[in-house]
Amino acid sequence: MAKNRKNQSAAIRFGPVLKVVLLCSLIGGSAIGYVWQKGEIYRLGQQISQREIKLKQLRNDNKRLGEQISILHSPPLLDQRVKELNLGLVPMSPLQVVRLGEPPPAKPDNLSRQFTQRSVNDLTP
Image 1 (tube, rainbow, N blue to C red):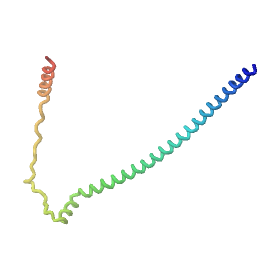
Image 2 (image 1 turned 60 degrees about the horizontal axis):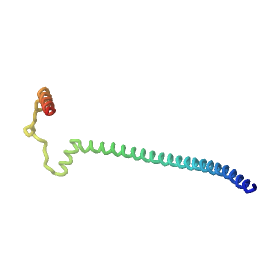
Image 3 (image 1 turned 90 degrees about the horizontal axis):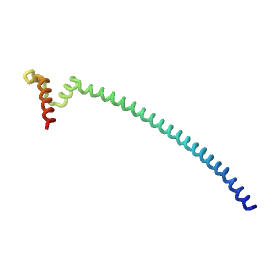
């Protein structure tokens, strides 16, 4: 009978040890997950701030380049550059300008009838 008591007491001790190990691993895993999550939040916050700084720089560059384009497209500056480079360009005369009129719009009634007739004819075997 003593043999049974030894086996029984060992089985009783194994249960609480297993519970403690599982509880400790659960708490430890939760702690590790919490620390990892905080690290990720910090890392993502850093990325957001860096990208906001880059966005501000790009907007400033875009504004500066837009102003530069508007200056370069100005007629007085273009005339000055033509004179500097001796290109020999002159303003065009009114006789050189050809104006084309807009073609009349197609009648939508004819087009819709043709489309309807084609659709019906295509569907019939």
